[in-house]
Image (cartoon, one colour):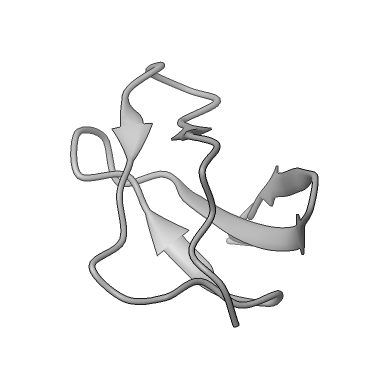
Length: 55
């Protein structure tokens, strides 16, 4: 696993989503500002998608 150099930006509010741990494909990260969750799909290049919670 390697630390990514690219920023992960929240698709809802535009804030940077930060992680204190090394990132790995499949990680789920939560925006500290609005709570939106994204799943990391690729590290090089960084790709991610919004997780939609079914209600």
